[in-house]
Image (cartoon, rainbow over all chains, first blue to last red):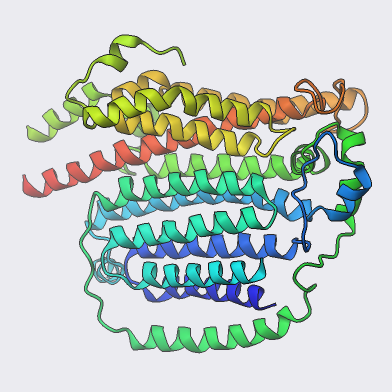
Length: 116
Length: 199
Length: 163
């Protein structure tokens, strides 16, 4: 309960960084923090108390494994989402480099002024 | 267990505050790395070793890309004037968001007792149906293969988009730009470009 | 991935200091072996194509950072990376189509074998290998494009401003 709420606080930190900061690299860092918070939130929902990882070993009885394992479905969704996050970060950095090439600065308000 | 996760989450929030508020960009990126490695430890505590491995490696690559591609080009810290409207409006919005989130979180299943309707089926039958011991792998590559195909497409699209943005010539010389190789230059090509610019 | 000893031994002026080069030379084989282990045993132990692919991409990145971009491009050129990327993505979309011969898309049609063996679980190790190749090639290509090309753009801009 309080864990869920703290994860949402981490999400809000990321959104605040995205809105209020002027540096583009800071904005990218805010997006990365949002990514972490959402992944952690999804994994927290699927946790079972005193659970084991959803990986079978040879001498493990099947019924006991099915009763004690944590939820494997959120893990499967988050696993791909992390790598997608890396690809999207590369796209953001590429846009950032293009902006730097055109305006020679990372400052967002400066870019707005130069554009108008 | 829960208290350890609580301490870890508070540590993450402190790290994110430092990453947001510090002036130096390099220390900001490194504080972001603190948050990422703490997330990885939390995944390991929550019974998800697959994601913990992936998170560690991806975090290293994020740090390398951010430092190498952006910080080393321009590390000047920006003098920010206090933008009252953005800060106040965002704070009001986040206060409202957190209040409603606090009300909504009560309706979720409590921590430690997930509602596993589909997943229970997967756990019981994954070994007979697919023969893979790792249930997570059997889900992403067999039961939900369409999902992984879509995610691979998204990764491919984002990489292609980054290459298109980093194309060498702009819109002016479109016909020349289409015939040129996109992206990485060899040493000789860089020297040729320098020679052209010197002239 | 065949290493040429003359490049790896020579401590040229490119890249980082000899300390870093020596450590990278020792760690290189272990990193690649670990990445391939993570990919190939993805259906038995924690890991899989995504994690192992990112580990292999990290191996190429550390090679590039320590020895300079010539060595990194010689190990895996940009054109080779894009070809591997496209081929692996295409195979990951086409190989499940053979499942139509026996039933439906993404059908696990190969022999499942005995559980807990390396050659088991039908198609899953095959898909893991495809995804590993794809993630390695795409992440390494994007790193090379961002670091080398982005750096070159900023230098060009400075020069244009001065001259």
